[in-house]
Length: 254
Ligand SMILES: NC(=O)C1=CN([C@@H]2O[C@H](COP(=O)(O)OP(=O)(O)OC[C@H]3O[C@@H](n4cnc5c(N)ncnc54)[C@H](O)[C@@H]3O)[C@@H](O)[C@H]2O)C=CC1
Ligand SMILES: O=C([O-])CC(=O)C(=O)O
Image 1 (spheres, rainbow, N blue to C red):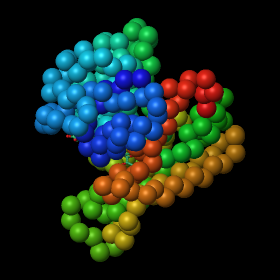
Image 2 (tube, rainbow, N blue to C red):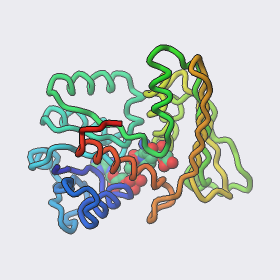
Image 3 (cartoon, rainbow, N blue to C red):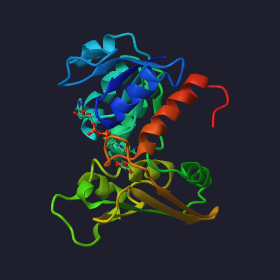
């Protein structure tokens, strides 16, 4: 499977390393990358023009860039009849955008893959939601203070307490997890979010609680940071790889 990549940052570089250098998935390779600034990346064709990138011989576009990029390029990817994998899932807090992407995917018979990112437990929420057995979902995210705010902090501080819908507007680079949680569960207006900036923290932690007719769930994920950049959880990049693996195998689908 030939993959086109948007975004040569933390996650993008890691994906190239794992898929191309280490050949983690034998049938899958990143062959094209869209970048605004890079001219060369070892072993990959680099495009600075988005249409030329889309015209290249790729089957799926993997987005590892930003919510803005998803909104700017998402429609064109589907119109070009490419499948799309999105890690900046915060873009889907916008219901209009969500509806448009769904309509285009339907029209052009393409798929949009949304990896679980830096959290888990989505299978439970999806199952419970199917028959309205889910009443409440909450996520408490604790991150190193420097990932969230510019001023140094002496003590940990709650920097946000509200809905997922508000959280992603205020912290678009930091709380995509709340939107995948909303999509799996009860929506971004009902999903509660608390964000704690902790000067003593060295990793991102997410604690998810849910309850309803299905029972109760608590999932706590203590994420190791990406090897090269502590702001992003390693698991986010791994979840992209596992989604691609599932697509490659496409037989026993979990
Ligand atoms: N769903 C989840 O659980 C998680 C999602 N994320 C999200 O994944 C995305 C990538 O994360 P990282 O690799 O750590 O970020 P990063 O900041 O290291 O890299 C992003 C790259 O994308 C490029 N980029 C941004 N906007 C662009 C645009 N409009 N057009 C072309 N290139 C653009 C940047 O120049 C940069 O090279 C971010 O949006 C981040 O918030 C990160 C961690 C977890
Ligand atoms: O990496 C993480 O732990 C979560 C994150 O940044 C996001 O959800 O945007």
